[in-house]
Length: 338
Image (cartoon, rainbow, N blue to C red; front, side):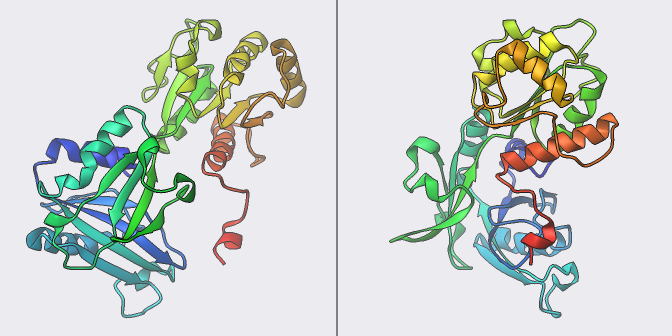
């Protein structure tokens, strides 16, 4: 997916010498398609990378981006979907969205985006600080910054999500950034294919672990990294890089061995395929219990969404996993957006 910040930056980097504008949502009131901190890049020839709405604002934003490039000034735009005369009224969301557009220039060090690329490539998390300035501010004097988690000049606990930080020099938007989520699939059978494919569509990194010769074939998992090792052969680094895992070897012993290796690491989510009586057998063989895991342990895996085909099972598991990783609770959208 080209809407992940990592993908935006990797698209931008080879063309960094061209003229670009960064567009970022700074504030919303009411409902909106994307939240504060969402970013998009516009190229001098009109190409846009990423999205800030369902597609209705981007054409108008492109016009503002071209103006920002020509003037080398920061541009601020507000879209009010509750106003019939506003360009965004047809969106029908009823919210107000503030967007800041900043030209990327050598004088402002391309807004520190090179540092973001390097951080992502090395698996580092941190915070991106964008000063909130008035429209017409000289973009050549604009200074954004990326701070690794250990070097931030503000309390990290206050910025689990994007927020505004006030200093004597003014207000800044603080955007927490981290590498893409990493899913480990233990078992490379045919029913693991939709899980890997859906996770890739979500923009996650996927690694499939299976030491068996006939499993985890590259042709079945074209977008995943494949590790042809048994659980006993895996190192701590293999598991430490994961955020979540699905265990689905369809073999009691292999599943038990995988859980035993995984349990030693603080993964946010671990799912085990199969019914409750099978779960108990696997945990008994591993010498573990449902309370042995530091994060959420889901067994039987996933949410009760209905359906029995591999694609339906994949959806139920990844929906639950996605909620855990994003700190969500199981609610209807109409309960949240009232």
